[in-house]
Length: 86
Picture 1 (cartoon, rainbow, N blue to C red):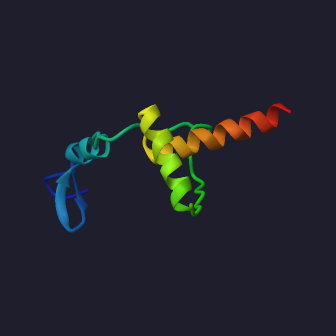
Picture 2: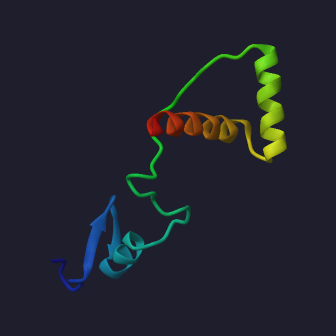
Picture 3: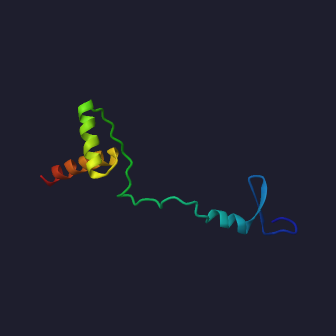
């Protein structure tokens, strides 16, 4: 490829050894592994609450030790699952 240095490659204008380039491609950059297709959550629901409804939701989340968004999701999933059982 290159005179005297056949194992070199050019990447982004810099010379990088092919071995180093392979190591960079296989590098683990951290983070969690990807979720399976059935566990992936990609849809969003947005709603508005009254002050009283919000206080009730905060109370439910606090008693369950969950975040408000997780408590909302659990309530929604519970209703959806009960409707599909009918």
